[in-house]
Image (cartoon, rainbow, N blue to C red):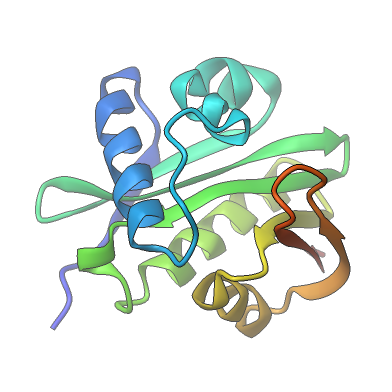
Amino acid sequence: MSTALTLRRYDPGDADDVWTVHERAMRAAPIEFVDDAPGDRPLRRIPDHYLEAGGEFLVGLADDAVVAIGGFQREDPVTCQLRHLRVDPIYQRQGYGTRLLSELESRARADGIHEAVLWTNERLRAARRLYETNGYEETTRETHPDSGQVFVRYRKPLE
């Protein structure tokens, strides 16, 4: 039986816990964890990159601990990009990712956003399954010029 997940907006006091969830999730993933990956730097400055930039960032709590994280950034007035959706491996497969995704979509809709997009590594099968199960459609694939890794772009209308 899973513990109920409580979602709330990020608070600066969550900074270390957010990084811990990110690192645990990525170290358990089938891709190499890079400590200072450029794409993860916004996690070190969430207010600047998400909250003060018209986006949102949520933390999910279970057992009095941050166990899920994720947010969205505006790409334009009606489109957001979902970023850094992570669930601590101990708490995966309990529906927390779906709940977090649904809440982010709901908040984006309330902010006037009509479409969500995201990128994920092709090798992150569980993440891809989460997005596809929740109505996201693959739109393109791109190979990173330095790493050779393939990234998949998804989109979903939020109307």
